[in-house]
Every structure is written in C-alpha cells, then in structure tokens.
Length: 114
Length: 112
Image 1 (tube, chains in turn orange, blue):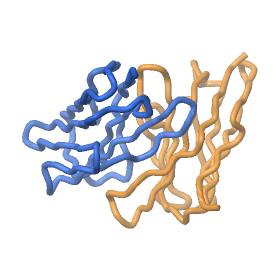
Image 2: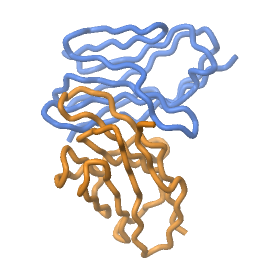
Image 3: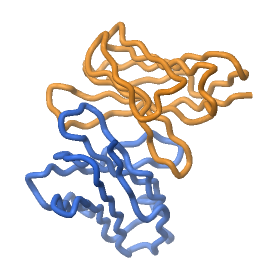
Image 4: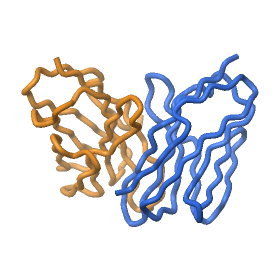
C-alpha cells in the first residue's frame, strides 16, 4: 500500500525538550515538505527538500531542524528554541521531475507542549 | 516572500447553492495553482488544479478560473452538497521553486 506515513498521531512534550516527528513515504518522490497548521493561518512551510542530503528553509524555520539522509524519510525535530510548538504538523511529498505535480499529505501529527 | 490571500475565511451556504472562494497573490510569478480540500480530522487532498496556459478548468461540479494579469484565481462549486463541507486551501508554486505556498483556508459549511 503506497503512501506517506507520519508518526506518532499525537505527541506530548514537556517544555524544554526536543522532539522528533517521523515522516516516511514509499511513493519514490524526490521532494518532501513539512507544514505547520494553526487555526486561521493555513499551512505554513517549515522546511522542504528536493533531493537527498539537501533541504531549504521555509517561511517559519526558526526552532526547527530537519535531515534528509534517505529518499524515503524526512524527520522534523522541534527544538526547545521553538517558542510556540503546539500545533498540527503535516508532512507531504511530491515528484520533483515535473514542477507542477500533486503533493500528497500524511495524516498529520498533533504536538502538544505540556 | 510569496503571499497568497484567500477569502472568505468562512462561508455558509444552503444545499444546492453555489460557493465561490477567491485567492490573490502579489509577490511572485507562478504557473501552477492547485486547490486542496481538508475534511475534519483528515489530511488535505488535491481536488483540482490549473496551469497558467488555460483560464478555466472544470471537473463535474467544481471549476477553477485563473486571471494571471490580475493575479487571482477562484474555486467555484455548484450544486453544493453537505459532503462538500470542509476547509479549502488554494496554493501556488512560485516559478523556479519546488514548494507550495498555501492560502489561509476557507471553512465551507453546507447546510441541508
């Protein structure tokens, strides 16, 4: 069953702790993305990667870090430097051989800082 | 940076009515404009997209129009049904970049 999978679905973190969100895809997509969704603010881009071992900052990268060591995986780390980390995080992937192709989203991870 | 404005933020219609959502952009050139639907508790999914070489595209009850000169594009849903109730996002891909910039979303509520 092909697709893009995020884990866990719900995540709780204590203030001051780093936490890593998982994103895996078996669609053979080169491009992967992390978005943050807050009520009334749409989907804001955190980081994206067009190819293995390369990634670019999006609009709200501060307090986050990513890695792209494998084509299938694009984990996001929410660091203690992120001032307001409680949000819904969505990962997505797309083909990169054509510039205008559909992005497929994971089911999301809801992070709550307690 | 790129910015996409989306209006309205909420839209309530009666079943059978039409719904129109509009997006405008100002900072970038783009030739790809997708629309995503996100039902409650689910992931966003592509419902229709349009490329800059056409001005309109239709798929059953859904249509999208594009005015590149004025830098706005719109989603039209006719004969709305309760299952159309969801949050709709417009997006664009800035020319030369492999990323999608999204609007702020429109919550559509279709009442029976």
